[in-house]
Amino acid sequence: MNETSVKSAAHLYPVYIGENLRHQTDHYLSKSYSSVLIITDETVASHYLSDVQESVSQETVYVHVIPAGEKAKSVDTFYQLHTKAIEYGLDRQSLIIALGGGVVGDVAGFVAATFMRGIDFIQMPTTILAHDSSVGGKVAINHEQGKNLIGSFYAPVAVIYDVGTLHTLPDNEIRSGYAELLKEALLADGDLYQSLIMKDLSSLSNKDLADKLLKGIEIKAGIVGIDERESGIRQHLNLGHTLGHALESLLGYGYRTHGELVALGLLFAFRVSEKTFSSQLPYEQLYTWLKSNGYPFKLPFVEPARILSKMKKDKKTLRTTIQMVLLKDIAKPALVEISDEDLLNYLHDFQKE
Ligand code: NAD
Ligand code: MG
Image (cartoon, rainbow, N blue to C red):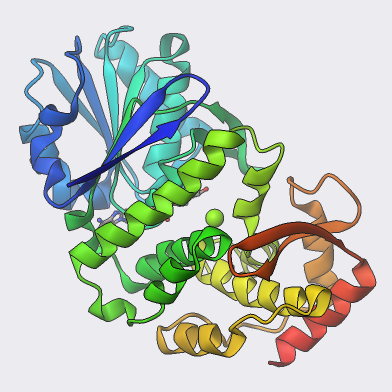
């Protein structure tokens, strides 16, 4: 087991990462609680809920299972969870455990942030992507007008990450989370980046994954420790997301996973970086690795002008000109304004590759 910690405005919280941690949940609780509510989704429940339930010895343990998938990050689920928390008699000394991927973490975390003005919660991530979503203190649900529009900053009291849960993930979810790991490495650690693309995804061991995820978490923790509220360098975590988000929304959520499209966004950011800074980035190497690991290269054609207008609607875009995170080199990110004309040309060329 490895351990690191994350600084938030509210407190410092530990991240435990290793195998079989789900069998020892109690061991990682820093105090006793009046009651515990485990929130998980149907799929995760079928694999891991009983392990976690058995490992919590607090007297009163409740469980609520939500549907799997993004649609559960809704006002309805949020309201139902509050209703359950009230019916079960949770109080301010209760704990919520979010067992699952980013969806469970986000909605359960937002319930914890708001129930009785905030109670303790623990993140128990079960996806690779959730190494990203469980750290950094953002919790949210979706509004029908857009993703993550209702939420807050609310840090967990601990993250307990059992990498022994990851082998049951479908391949597209492995690709999704791994792309965020590639992103973190590109922002801060060239050696980690090279080690990430040395092997194919299918040959990664749990030990490999635990080591790499820990490093990814440390990179994210380093960034959010300085800029929790995203007024400065936290924006670097959007590397690959300018194109990734636009494609996700234009192709329809769920067409491909978030991270699979972010991976294409990373390649695009390489190209734009090369044009902007004459950076020497290993484009071909990344392209080949992504291709051989099943990332999506045969997407329906989308007009560059539609992509550009979608990029401009992204809620994180404050200006009329697009700001992109680029790389002067690996581990040297920079936020740069790109003119519409340049961006259209780059998108046009990129779609031909
Ligand atoms: P997810 O939670 O929907 O999980 C993906 C799928 O995998 C689901 O069907 C789930 O049931 C299944 N699953 C989970 N663990 C499994 C396991 N061990 N074995 C088999 N199946 C398993 O999605 P995700 O990709 O983990 O997270 C995406 C969400 O995270 C999005 O809503 C996104 O907005 C959010 N997010 C939040 C932050 C943040 O900072 N809060 C950051 C990034 C993403
Ligand atoms: Mg992302």
